[in-house]
Image (cartoon, rainbow, N blue to C red):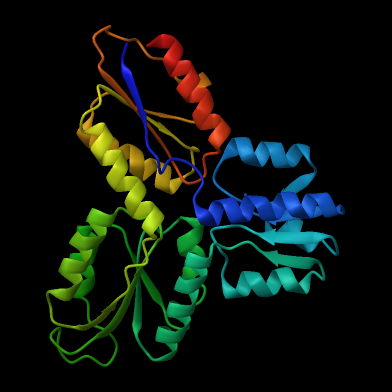
Length: 292
């Protein structure tokens, strides 16, 4: 029988737990309940909330039709402009933004007001990054890889006479970005000797989750990563685990798991993204135990 190792850090992080609990508490109070975008990146959770009458606002057109009830801000956060739009509806607004993301909003707001260029290390289309961009009073650059970092440091900013002129740059990170990639990008951004304020805003839970996942995958015969299709942190876990274990599977629930055991597996590893509920992790564990 294979040993099944489940990461202690698997499942809801603090910010996600807080956001989900906020919605369920508002449901108990009654009245029309809306979330501005999916409250978290987990289809199972969003579907359960829909059954309880929680509607996801997916467009400005839908928002324009709301004139009451309660609107809850998603855990990923929103821009200043979006915040103003929500309040203009006259609905009760409940902010479920992760506190660690709110801290990044403040950093960007304050440093951009001081005249610093703002650089966000992360995925430019992720809602957290788009929300962070909306708190800057200057144009923002989003960097996702080392190639983009090298292109950025060779650019001139308005008023520069040469590429070697001093640049004041404030760097923050998407909370769920790959910690190793972050360090690689920072090394490039600082090599020119610019005045760089580097804020490693990857949350501790993300770093711990990635480190533990890598350690388990390095000794596993099969590695399973559980997370939503649109979950950025789950996708990064899969990327990290796949490097260590060729037989890595990325699933949403146990129904997606189609294993073909060779019969000689010694260790089966399981981890899960920050938006994966405990019950889904337990269902996967039970399913795997039945096979191995």
